[in-house]
Length: 128
Image (cartoon, rainbow, N blue to C red; front, side, top):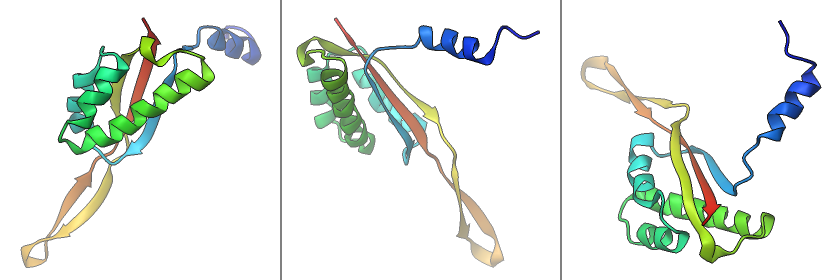
């Protein structure tokens, strides 16, 4: 049934780990659908173009994604020793995170639920 000792399984899992520079923001107070509008605009672009797009995008999510992209660029330069000019956005996605449930009082003693959705945003860079 088992496929080896626990340490062997962990070693095998770590061998094929992704070494590309990345940055992740957990529990961002942005719904995934709204974050994806901004992420779709920068996917596949080089980092200077992506930063320019985010700087002039009017959506709230663009300021959050811009900060995250700058973090990913800094990770690439400091940890991986890559040059900024050769980087591009290889992957960027937003996954669903736990939803904050709040109550809105309504007429005649009723209560409506307000769902404040959150997301986990990930940006992965790569070298051209």
